[in-house]
Image (tube, rainbow, N blue to C red; front, side, top):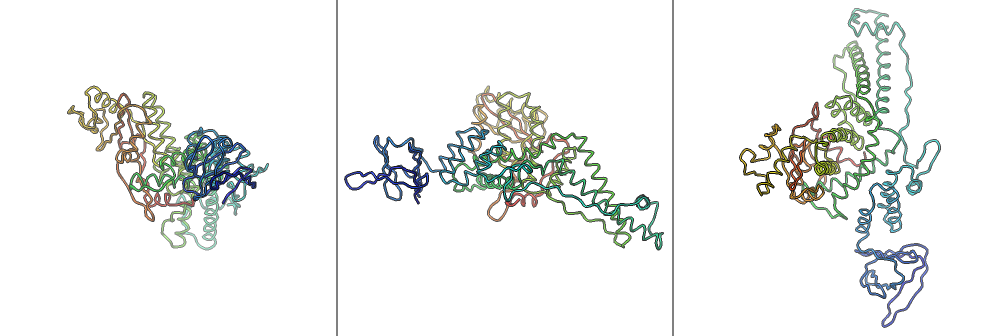
Length: 550
């Protein structure tokens, strides 16, 4: 189909050229060819087709064998390549943090009928600048004084009111207290006294249940997991975009399956994660600003209420002849992520992980982002003792890992010292390799042991030079180095058609770097985090990775 806006089309007929003026209503001429180029005209029109011939006087654009000739003086410029390739070049040329640049690129995509890319660029603009009016309008938002920017189908979390039930009177409170303390045995009560005590327990059970709901609501609110800064629909969309991109990349790395792609799968994952991470970081802002003492107080109040509720329910169960302990209740997705965040902030890290694993999709990713942020914050203090090149390499490794869904590694100064000494030794002795001619420093494991890093397994990547970008790019070209770069922290599951394949290689949790004329990166399994971090539950992780509707 052809769309034109007051442009000249030239048709070649036998031995002469005839100019035909054609007027249509739209802006763009789009030819259905496999490898189109984009020709921009001085009058604002655009012709998309394959440039088959180009001279000083004219340009020939082909469409399924039909030639269209445009005079050179009417052409502003030509961009060669497929629309995907041109889009990717434009994307790489603009600043990643420039909201207006993304908006302009969105307009270009819209003009070229690249609707998916256009929406993505407009959303990037809104992510960077939530108050960009034109981008909001392009995405269908309207501004209201009550709710701000809203659009049909997208809603912010609404506050749920808990309807109060019957309140306990003084006598009932006293009865429940005595029963729970053990000073009053229901078995010794008869008639109306027994009925009154049972009724007191029932009222207490309902009251405590409502109290727990109120505390859950407080935990969700104070965690910021459901804060009205980004709609759930946008978070789901960017979660899905990123999951698709990173799983394609991981399949290539771990399964050797190259997919037909428009551009580098890893570059695509990096690009999408950059903006998805902005959304996730907004969700952890509240917890980052919370003190550990406040988090502990919130956990303490919630646990006290849960324990009291369990005792009341157990007492009622005993009355009814049921000695089975109260069963574990189903945990809501939002609360699991929120409570996991609060627990982790309070210092109960293992408990935080266990609870957070009951959440899914972007909410679980919010928790992982908070854990990652904690690691990266600790790394900043450690990296003050590293050179500029070494700092850049640590950051690049962790940025790359996170973009593909891996946790960042903790920087360990012991491994840094081992890496530096190996880099210096290779330069001094004139060799390049993992095996040292010095007996006591023969392997990465022995070199780590010399700096008191005693582990059964130690990994190492080498590079000639000290540029962090070149080093990581080089390792990405090697299957084994690439896998080592992404290994560790949890079971790595890669979606392959209808099944999730567990791919466990190296259990890395820490990293050390040395950058001189040679670059050395050492990986180890010894975590510096107090309390440790358990491995993720495979079934839960499998569900999260495979889900596209969370």
